[in-house]
Image 1: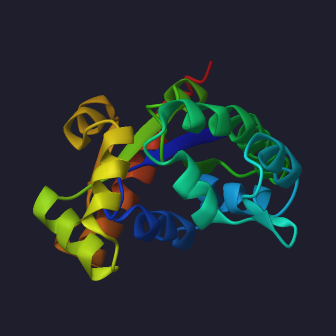
Image 2: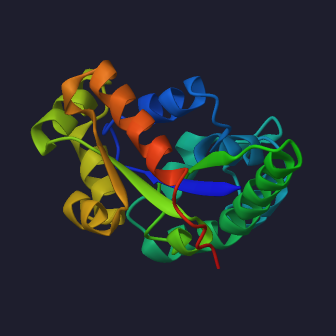
Amino acid sequence: MFVIGLTGSIAMGKTTTTRLFAEEGVPVHDADAAVHRLYEGEAVPLIEAEFPGVTKDGRVDRTALGQRVLGDAPALQRLERIVHPLAREASAQFLKEAEAKGAPVVVLDIPLLFETGGESRVDATVVVSAPPEMQRARVLERGVPLERLKAVLQRQMPDAEKRRRADFVVDSAHGMEHARAQVRQILAAVAKMPARRK
């Protein structure tokens, strides 16, 4: 089974691209969605113990947690020490199930793929990218404050560096059909590539 690691910064078109892979019949694991589930399940008591007062009604209050960790690097590291191992477990479970079903290719959608060394756990990397002005316009369309965009970008590797490291780049600036064609080209290419996971 060939594992693609897909990443891209905020408002670059990553969600749309993962949907295009899914439409081609490729099983997709969304790391963000897995974290959301953890915030309503097994991570709740661990996070409450580390950050008292950030849970409510048996789930993590993401706004309260965000206010506690955003801009506070040590707090963010403490949170990541709780969440990352649990998220990796969820990802390993997904891979096991996909392999058992005989999936030839799967996608792991991991926002901080390069930042967490995740490229060593996949066979090829895909970065979804768009010009900075388009990214900014999309963020504003979503009603996200520019301060949040800046805070997110500070945590993430610059887009140019991600593109440099990627095996494939999906340019999301030219519409859905262009992106779909790129996804199909990537799937055709990886069908001929050897696995390289460690």
